Image (cartoon, rainbow, N blue to C red; front, top):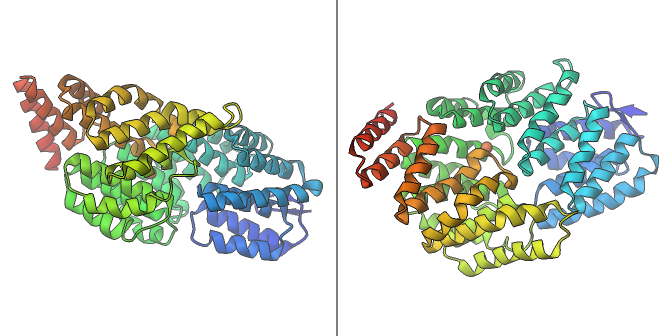
Length: 463
Ligand SMILES: [Fe+2]
């Protein structure tokens, strides 16, 4: 029996295929462009290598695209046919793929966590579990899952840096920034191509409002990261978030036009980056109508399949903000149909759509129509349910900004002041937030407090 590079037994007959499996997993962990071609080579080397078939099925699922999603069922069928000679671990991977194909995401991640209890160096289970916890907004499960396996890893084990990158990101999302940062920096010292680790450090800098450092961090590694796949554009999006906090709209637009939406893209992450930034610019009062159009042309073909609520809300946001209300309503109805027609116990996303995606979707349509009171009514409650949508705190913040803007535009000044005070308590270095706070305080006659806030914002923006 063969073993993978970390010593896990594999039922296979072809050493070349085992080697290619290791290389494909490694490329996947590094978000590399060659993951697809390597997967093809793996299939050519040995189409009967069970873990290769499972990997293919997993990667098809991860794309969250309807046409790829359908291919994952073919992989599942092949994996089941091959599983008569499987080890227990391999059989568990087949079971996980089956649960994923059935939409039972909680069962899927439970199986990966069972695998990790026995095989803490199963880096595929580890990374998939990490991604799924992130996908479901299970921040503490994501953090604890990494803590459980880490004692079984050290510098001598292949892939250690990737595990540190995941640990950094998990700690960051759990709000443990000081603990997270050195772990992520260590991962980058090990391998500067580890874009997920670099991204995790970028999140720490974003959440701590360390704007100049954030720009410098991404700029320092932009060349190695540019060679990674589509995920690199998400880093340029992160850098633009910093520009926005300096009120540097020109730099944001430049980054949009030349870096993260230089040309229309079918990739969901590109659509999310772009629509999310356009929404922020719109809230800032910038006219981005023609840019909305270019994203909407792609998003209008995503109204049918319900694969990821977080992505769906970005499609819906794009459709509503470009005034394609028929398509936006169609997408919202599709979410409602999904909830009505799927098994709540078995299909994990049923509850996610119900408690979070549908209310936020309704708020987005209301915002685009100028019904700001309705947005406030919905979002004051719904924002506390948004974590289950997955994505990061930094990404979901776009909908908190929408709520604040709606409170301002609907004249609910005291609510706006409260929300801004809340925001500043979390991010006291946000110049634009101090400016908004000052304006709202001025509306209720709090002249001295408004002037102090104005000066504070001015000072921060001048840094
Ligand atoms: Fe991010």
